[in-house]
Length: 169
Image (cartoon, rainbow, N blue to C red; front, top):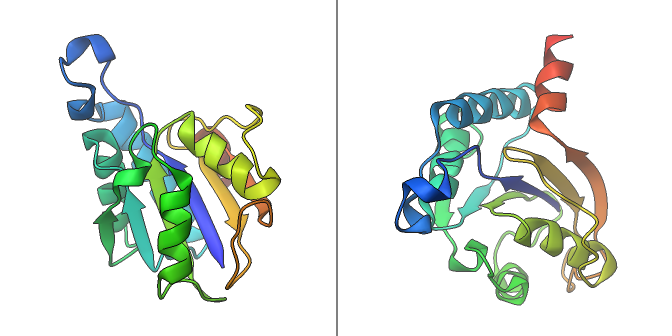
């Protein structure tokens, strides 16, 4: 099973909003996320489901992915909010109909959590080594039917700039 982990796009500054949960994407963040979505579509990626943090900037990022034809289904998933628990997602995945060889899922959320989740899925614990840029993408291959913690394989770690530049060349 393929899992794509995607960080939200560039958002408004924290100082501009009283409540961090309400910070939206700025225009540059929308544009870059649109470009990344188009690049993913161009290389044939389609998600069976996009799970997103309930925070505005992550939801907007997920909606851009969906609008660009990357998935027909999008759902909020509270564990993707900052400081969310990966075990909640693992339990969901193990019990879901998406725990299949041919499934392709996307998780949209925040740093440093997404980097930590990736490290846990690969190495079993956070290492503070992987950093996902805004609108960046990580691709993991997860084993089917078993707990994926420390059993997953990294196949993609890219910044949006690399994805966009590769498409143009």
